[in-house]
Length: 537
Image (cartoon, rainbow, N blue to C red; front, side, top):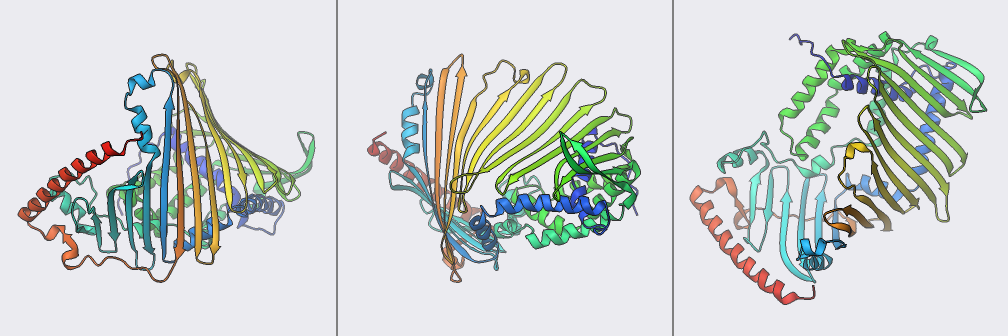
């Protein structure tokens, strides 16, 4: 067995690992000694709290969740249209960009029509894109992929598919004298899209991790105080004390199990390929994970981890997790995690969570916050969200808040959002005002037919001394029909239908390249002439 040289972990990596253990504690405890008190009281309340919040939101996403699950398992076809609109005005903008009116006119009459066919069983998919301006087709393209090959076609440039074996990407890039940067294979997009765990698989994995980490828990870590007061209300208070040694053992067990879990690495491999990451990136991750395992003893928790949970009606109403994390040779960081959940009625509730990091030797503080305020409305549920970041040190400060106000029904959601930025860390540069709306609706027409409609509107306002007050609005409208069917057909890529790129000689590819250049020049000439005749901008 090779010996791994111990390397130092950064302070913030140590802090993050510690937080992961604490956050995972509630779920872990549920699988351990459920029949015992006060442990049973805590784990049951944690489970009830999480399930209640999930079930509330699940009822407002039924069609969307059902559609997503079916699209991972069944063959389907889609027909979609994307339209947009843009408007910018104010200040010196028109003088700075004389073509602004024409650009806005083009975008407002631009439409993208898209189709796709997907068969998860055979890992095949095809798609097409048609770019239209004022209803006139400007350019078309199509795409096809199976387990072995990927092909693309742009009829206005060449009338055949260009096909490449998925495992020939690296060889093709080298032939074209282009750097591969570690990318040697085209990922199969159907498989990559399906590289996710089902709800049942996640439950199974969670149970396995629960049993592994749960071996480190003892009943004597839990204590109960009945009638404890919190902000004037009486609760059952459960206190959990986790020693430094126990926390390190939990962390090591979790990391070792993660390192050896091929299910996770298989999914990660597919997702990394889809993101265009080099094949060696996974090995780097494994090496970093091994380094973390070998250095778990660097995670010093002088006071251990303390958790206090205030429970009422089998629900965790308030909870605090505190610890001092002290990497070897570095100053401690105080970590405090708080959560609150107050249910007044079925759909009337408030929830919040905060993570605060305070270095012992530095006059700085980082706080990440989340608030949720839900109440029933006429057609369903209204929820106000606030996701915030607040940072301060001796020289600078920064605040960021994302405000979302959402109305949910069983088939739709309608969200207004606003991003608020402030603080001296931004300097003297102008800060844009960013806000907008997002609407989404999923309708089940019949057993095999769904319709999805989405609208995104983005508003940006800027007060720039050099440009004056400017405003810009961008809107996107997407409509998509999804049909599940057992009858999907795909191109064959055989014979004269496709150019097998790596089977062609350099001379043949050069001849094809010249033909494409001629077609492109002809297309540009026709396009510019047609653009001049469209007018109306």
